[in-house]
Length: 247
Ligand SMILES: Nc1ncnc2c1ncn2[C@@H]1O[C@H](COP(=O)(O)OP(=O)(O)OP(=O)(O)O)[C@@H](O)[C@H]1O
Ligand SMILES: C=C(C)CCOP(=O)(O)O
Image (cartoon, rainbow, N blue to C red; front, side, top):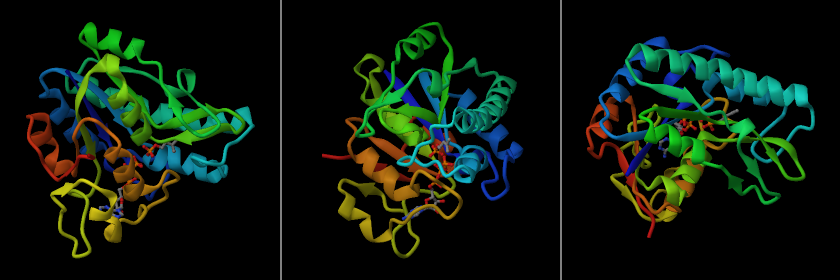
């Protein structure tokens, strides 16, 4: 059984200032992750690295670039953040290794993601913690578009070979919030939260909370959406924040 956990870009970076890591938040998250017992795949988002690099070049999840220089700039920005995440994980004693989607994944013309996972499974079998991240990924007919860490979480969770039974999305909000700002405990269909779901409040080319919930509803495994304060509970097997479980 494997757990997939995404550390939101808005948790590990200061999303409003370009290419700024939130060192304290990242160190806290890495320490929480170090307590996990079992097979774990980590994913992190773009935060103030990937989203700024992509937005500056007009690249989104739908609108691609045919410029290799632009694609590389987005990938390199994510590489800088990935290196910072790996440094923090190593510092906390986590045997983390990078798995970088541009070199591995692709999308078809409809945007469906193909993510080969044998290297991820092999790393897990050898006791490592693979760390993927949102990235520029080549898409049939569109050049290179942005693939969100959330899409990678979904692809990992749907991969039969990894046997994923728990998914966690750690964002800056304590869960999916209703119109009054209260955490919704359980979402089983999009309508449960549709009124309250907006985009992201920072530069984000991949859609914010509404897109997250929609993707998580399609999974076979339960997904938990929580904030940094819920990370210890999730790592210990608990159920912080909102549970998203489609039918
Ligand atoms: N109903 C809602 N409940 C909770 N958050 C919401 C809601 N509607 C919109 N949001 C926004 O969604 C954001 C979380 O999505 P976002 O994509 O920014 O997070 P992330 O995954 O941590 O970041 P990144 O995409 O960089 O990895 C929140 O900061 C909030 O502004
Ligand atoms: C913007 C890039 C390159 C990655 C986006 O990943 P996300 O923050 O998980 O949506």
